[in-house]
Image 1 (cartoon, one colour):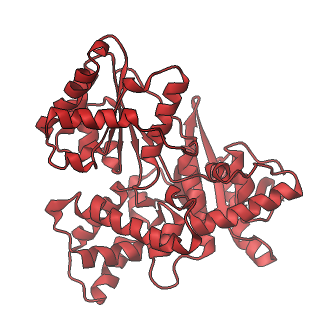
Image 2: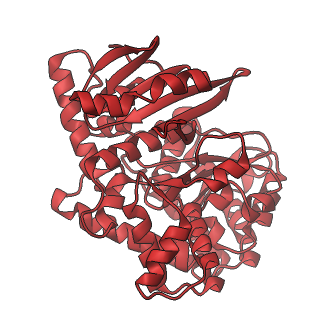
Image 3: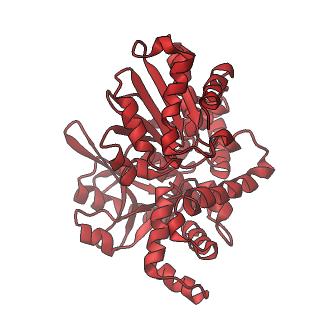
Length: 443
């Protein structure tokens, strides 16, 4: 690759108009002397979030020429190596020599982690106080592990999930009117669409008949690029991996153990070691394709001894690739609530009472010197005495035991409040809960 090629890549970005986009809510801002990483699943909108960052830069009076953007999936960079990375700032300053050391320059690198050894180049750029570095990636190793370690603690990561319900409503220009009957009707209709479609940005304006095909294509690409190609030394047999991964997402919002899955796969005639399946689970989590949730406990032994629950990066994606009947609407709604809690920055576990009643989510967050705890149950509907009893019966005991701040049951459309043994439980429709943030929704 020549210096002239890199200059053309930089100049091409400056010549093209910025895309029209729907604003995302996840804030990103530089920390002094640190790079900033926007990480998340493939196709979740990381590239467009950096375009939004550039647009915000321009609104603040910045100039587009002060942004050096390189996308490492550009075919012109297919043979780029670690030794070639210095050509980026060389090419930029050959185009704009007057800016060196005098003006702030923002370097934006999409998927730079494809280049082995790229961390040293980012650290080199950060040695200059006029440089800011923003990177994107579809691996959680930018949050922890060898990549984060290679940046020597000089990286601030931000996780970007697919569209929230608030962002989904913004894209379709639906007002967040939770008060009037008309507004509530629009939000119920939108929530139904959100449940069916999921939050991946690429589906927002695609024909509904194409949604499943698009999601299956996303899954295949994630498996190929973020699993198979990302771990060449693992020599992953696609048949074994696909069987495990699809069986796992079929358990979305359900308990699972690797041991039980190994037994089932061996009964199907597949050959592998248990250690291999643990590695595959780690690869899936690193690629943000699935998340595993432990039981709530201060004891690591208790967390490891009990089963975990599994959630997908997108409930519609899980439904599209799961074999058989897919994922039912109640479990999709539970997956949706889980992702929203993660999006809001809560640490999430499940809980099981002494009587064996399960609480879907114990959400914990440390703020201003104190620990907040919320309990959430998810049910598509709580109509009927038997359903209410099943969903509510474990909450009072758990509120007192964990000293939780609130207990909420999130439903598709039911709304009420109840006093159970002196504990207030709010039953809230998802379309209202999703728009309320962490504040208790008005009833």
